[in-house]
Amino acid sequence: MVIAVFVMLWVVTAALNQRRHQLALLVLQGATPWQLLFGNLAIIIVLFILAAVASSLLTPLAAPYLFDLLARAFELKLTYQATQLLASIGTGLAIAGVAVLAGTVLTVRTLSKIRPIEALRQSQNPPRQVNAFRVLLGASLLVGAICALIIPGTATRKIDSGELATHISGRNPIESRVTGFIGFSMGGMFLLIFALAVLAPYVMHWFTKGWTHLLPLPFSTWKLARQQAVGRIQRQNATIIPMTAGLSLLMTFSGVLHTLTDSLKNFASNGHSMNVNPHMLTNLMAMLAPALIIALVGAISGLMITARGRRLDLALTYVSGASTGQLRILGALDGLISMVTSVLLAFVITLLSTCGTAFMLQRYLGSAKISVQWGYWAGIAL
Image (cartoon, rainbow, N blue to C red; front, side, top):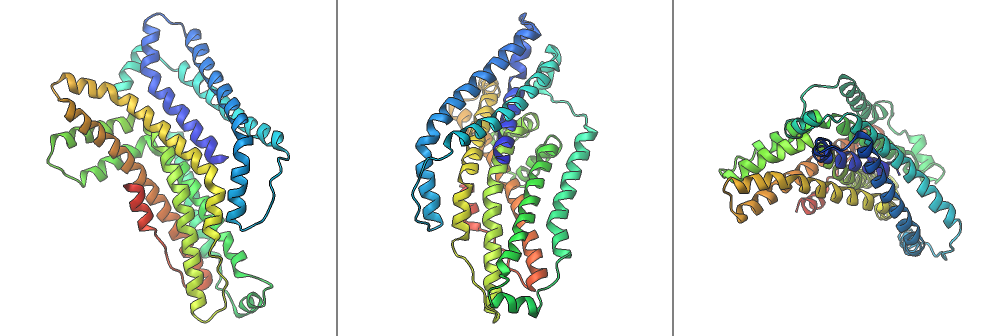
């Protein structure tokens, strides 16, 4: 639910920022602030009603299939019964209503700040001033993430013979103890994502500049696409955050659980008795499916918003003499740069969270093995 609300708000923010230019033109054509406000609020309310109706109709149809998926993942033989379905739908709509209310507040806040000439200027040249509160909040979240990934390891002592004996007898399984490390690692991941979201206007375009600078391709199309992508990410960095959040959630769970499993197997290979559940990753992936679907939808929405903003740049490039083939290559490279930026950011967040887990296990078990799923990352990049 945290991921769902987070992705929804970022998509709403990206959509509003995308429309600042259009709204400013409407003001210049004579639209009053109240007309803009009620028009946008009507759009939000209609979209919420449509989403609520669709969700209420689809939930009873999808619930049996999701139940069967989870039951098979956990190897349970259970019979589906539609109990408390209305209560579940009501809870979901209530949470969605809170997110819509927050989106409405963002809409009012954005519209109240629109000044026609200023909005037209900022749509091409975003302001460069630094928000001190935002930087302080981002730094605090970053420090909190580092603490969540380091302090549990420093405060953990190595397992002693007494604990190992109670584990072998089955009274104190080590798995129940090290599972707490997953919580700290995932908490650190969330704080890293939130820190990235807060600091995105100040670091995202520099990050994109940095990695694209490492690929000095001698093509004018690449240079132009790089310039356009960096400028667009600086203006509309919110479109990349949902994708980064979804990839970080998936790959951090995968990396942390593989690191935990490999470390426990290595611990058992040193002569200790250890039972490792090989279905742990599959089970948690089944539970994560709804959040991943929401993150995927948010990522697609962000890419569609970015594509709309790319049309004006491509149109101007076409007027300046570019051919249709060059425009297609330019648009593809522009989108590719945004995708790779999101994947690289998610990789950094996942690697930090996985290293935090390995550090905790190293302190507790005396040895640890970091697991990075290079094959998964290669597939995601492709």
